[in-house]
Length: 169
Image 1 (cartoon, one colour):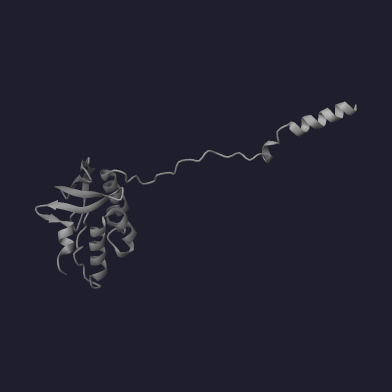
Image 2 (cartoon, helix red, strand yellow; image 1 turned 90 degrees about the vertical axis):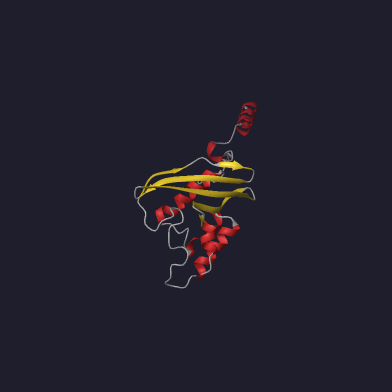
């Protein structure tokens, strides 16, 4: 009987602990990428999403983090300067929507084209119809510290966002 008791204690002590007492480590999951901005065309798509047809804050004082996220240092600084130095009540250089090159919009057939990449520079065409007028805008991007950033927006005909924002107030 004594041997049976010793054997029973030995078996119980070697048995695994109940499931509730065990700590099970789950393998680490890779971080979830909500907004993919790993390619030039993805940056442009995400900028338009953040802009929300003009209801976003990309081109407002409250949008400084968005400006720094999407634009290179020079363009972000120009935007910030115009936003902070334009006298209250005046429209300044941003009297239009820079992503549609228009004051009023009725956008159809919106398309972000494939990027053309050459080294650390890229171009991404965006096409759409605004009030029955076909429009093409070219985004210029640069690879900065491993991230694609918009360095300018070319509206054609010698007009671009950097030139517009660089004009004297």
